[in-house]
Amino acid sequence: MEATKRHFFSDMGAMLGRSMRHITRSMDTIITVTIIPIAMMLLFVYVFGGAIQAGTDNYVNYLLPGIMLMAIASGTAYTAFRLFLDMQRGIFERFHSMPIERSTVLWGHVLTSLVSNTISVVVILLVALIMGFRSSAGVLSWLTVAGILALFTLALTWIAVIPGLTAKSVDGASAFSYPLLFLPFISSAFVPTESMPPIVRAFAENQPVTSIVEAIRALLSSQPVGNNLWIALVWCLGIHLVAYVFAMWIYRHKAA
Amino acid sequence: MQNKAIQVKGLQKSYKKLHVLKGVYFEVEKGSIFALLGSNGAGKTTIIKILTTLLKQDSGVTTVNGFDVTSKPDNVRQSISLTGQFAAVDEILTGRENLIMIAKLRHLTNPRQIADNLLKRFGLIDAADRRVSTYSGGMRRRLDLAMSLVGKPQLIFLDEPTTGLDPEARIEVWKIVKELADNGTTVFLTTQYLEEAEQLADRIAILHEGRIIANGTLAELKKLFPPVKVEYIEKQPTLEEIFLAIIGKEEEK
Ligand SMILES: Nc1ncnc2c1ncn2[C@@H]1O[C@H](COP(=O)(O)OP(=O)(O)OP(=O)(O)O)[C@@H](O)[C@H]1O
Ligand SMILES: [Mg+2]
Image 1 (tube, protein in one colour):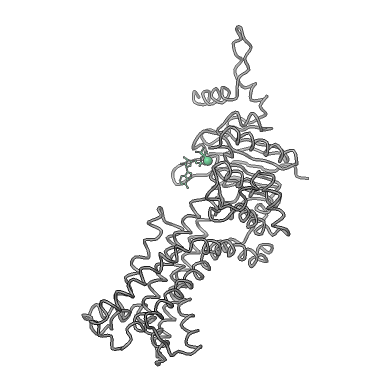
Image 2 (spheres, each protein chain N blue to C red; image 1 turned 120 degrees about the vertical axis):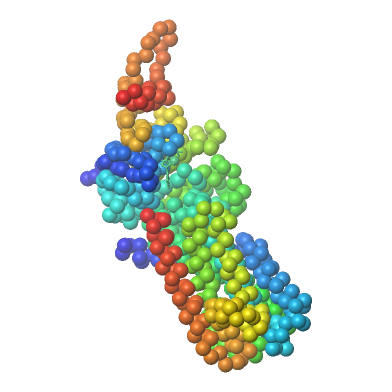
């Protein structure tokens, strides 16, 4: 154990080097991941926007947080996909028969997810700017937003690890993200929850996406964030913790 | 001094209800080439996975380079290397990057130099900076083997190293295996090709229905074969005939 522990960071470095090449060589996945959220943004702003009473004069500002979460949700499906391929192709077995710190094999994928989702979010941010998104937020608020998005990405990525390790087919590996893609619709991401029927509204107001979206929206428009920030953080950390423990448990069992 | 690279005593393994290994016994001398023969589904890969710490055994005592695989897996991993049945290469990386990655994971000091030498040795220099996804099956297998040689492990496991290769590529792999053994590396290989075992192995073991039913040098195995009726031409039994004869005898029991 001693000998392998000391190598955690160098093993991590090698795994990250591998992952980074995977990202830079598959830039098309960034396009696939961002295209639907961008299309949604265009649709909602230029087609439905006029009919939606969001209570703001800049609907792009209102929409952006939800769109970013959607992009992250579809981006993490690629983690499940990549992990599944690694399991299939036997490169895991090679790694596992070597004297390396085993958890770095998973962490490599998780950090890849963080980097590629950051790129996706930046792309979406740029498109939003062109569409008229404006923010008065200061550096601290932006950093807080980045922190929330990073935590959200990590939480979803650890969820993605679970099907990635256990799926029997490629489709099975990424299917988990479909319900996640719909969560923003039943939240305050596109329209205020006040307009929803009572049961839907109760769900919308108490699911994680709403608090995360509201927290980010408030931060970006320099409004008081209130409790939403803490609720959002608790959701992200809670999901992260549960998914991490579960994913690691599966990983240990799979890797004997 | 420990002169056994592998010792397996009473090894058992089941997948749910399927009892694959029913008490396997064998030893492998350091510096030798040991071939494990068996038909599809005999359990060859299962034995390799247990020896390389990828799979837990149900019972038995298994030591690799003197270390127990169950209680000292980290020590075992320090001195072995695995080339699995299916090429374990990263398709998105280039051949060179694959080798450098393994050298880094083995914490070697000069990954670039090591990669260069192996690329030369395996005739992959021209393809070194191309993505592995563009490689042919034979090139992929050679890269796979090269990756296993990074860091000069004392004991190398090759699971059906020549399956799917054309005859030329197969002879190429045989040459590499012989070179390894000449340099003192222990080689444990599995194969379905009897000719391969005949060509390479110092000792051959036959795995059948969960047990090793024969284990010896080629000459010893030939003695097990019932004497051939010689009529006009003298004919030596091939390993194929020996194999079928032994399996036949087992089934009669
Ligand atoms: N993970 C698993 N779960 C259930 N059964 C398995 C598993 N792995 C292997 N088996 C079964 O165990 C038996 C032995 O498999 P193994 O892969 O060790 O055979 P093998 O000798 O390597 O065969 P081959 O020559 O086809 O590679 C087979 O019947 C196989 O179906
Ligand atoms: Mg096999």
